[in-house]
Length: 271
Image (cartoon, rainbow, N blue to C red; front, side):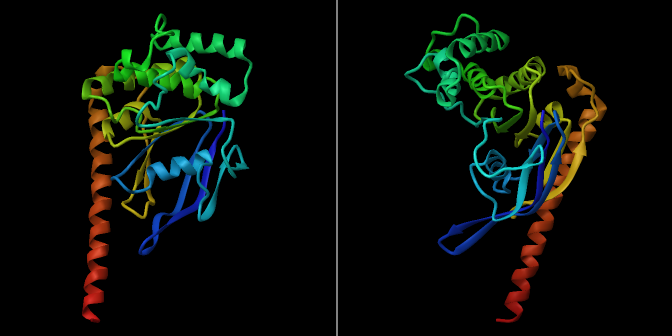
């Protein structure tokens, strides 16, 4: 298991008008084996942070370390899940999971056995030879999870993995993820979500982003015992944490709007 350290990270993108500052001086520490959720309004840089941790992007300033090693490019110890499963429709369920082994040139027999075991663990035994169009959305995301953890990554990055699912399936998948994470003795997890209850249900800690440029307003501990059952969502502490995080997200948005309004007013006074 490995920790993640984000130290003073800023990210700028070139746009037609010049530069767009997406992240500004981001500081975050995720301890080994922790599950940390990232919440904030759309466009605040949560997904950009995941790409930086994965080594798919390089920060404009600052640095990111996994187990005290600087991230300088894609790594073999990181797994990633996206909002959509991104499965190959011409391949079977088993072959989709085995894409990791093929790309990384891992021993076929060893990882074929692991892929089948993972599919059993997520309730897809007997579906190995099915195709994507024969699976529900939730089943497709289970396949994507198996593919992401096939190569024993010590860091798992999840970018709104249930965002495209209906509300009931999304809630079911959240509980299943909790179980799968425990069963695979998985990883240090960074989990992007726009659902505050989902963040509280799954995470050990929740990092709240400000509107763009993204900064971390606060990191809130979630002291609810594990495993978390559906009943926990009716408890007072769950409701209190959800309300607290929601107020933080929208308070930071209001503060950002006030700052922008003040800047515009100041500029107009000088025109």
